[in-house]
Image (cartoon, rainbow, N blue to C red; front, top):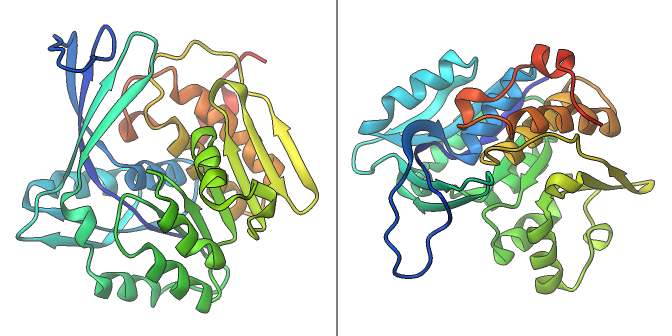
Length: 291
């Protein structure tokens, strides 16, 4: 089987800061690096690192050819990434404080104008039972979800960055919903429903250092997080999502897929960076972690 990811591609400008700046505050960074990033990119790389066959559907500007090359180096199929002459590749400004917490500002760029034709071209190669993954850093989510459902694909949706209208638009077409704790609360406030009342077969809510909850057909199940010293939480949720999908794609039951993904996320928060430092399956399976 395969995973088809309608996903963002970002150039991440990452600044290490002593603390998050307040209103009107000018702050000197202690470090600055440039990474390949974007939630979609991170998820594609995580899927590939976890052993899945993943096809990325997206767009870059003329400044983003190196991003496409890097995705290819990570084992991702890049045939369905459009080159946009009149748009820049999406930029992300990421601040990371001494506790590993982050703050992100996005300039949407090419992620907002992915051509529908490239989506249709990509999914023309998909097969019944493949996974389609979407998230909120691109256009075409509802179109993709509805098309995927009609084609017999299993549709997964990571509801970030959170937008209540976008979430409600795709709920009827998805099989698996990923939320973090804040997004779950925002969705409940917007629609008045808890995860198990949304009409989605499987809902996974990540809780950071407190682990994750899975709301499935047999009721809720909690998974504890591994005890590690976090230095940077950027990309950890995306790594978790990619590992869950890769596990499901190769036939693992949800509980097992989440367990492996918890290990991958625990490794990820101990590293600085985004897609370039996502651990591979061998690391995840063989690294000793805390309880």
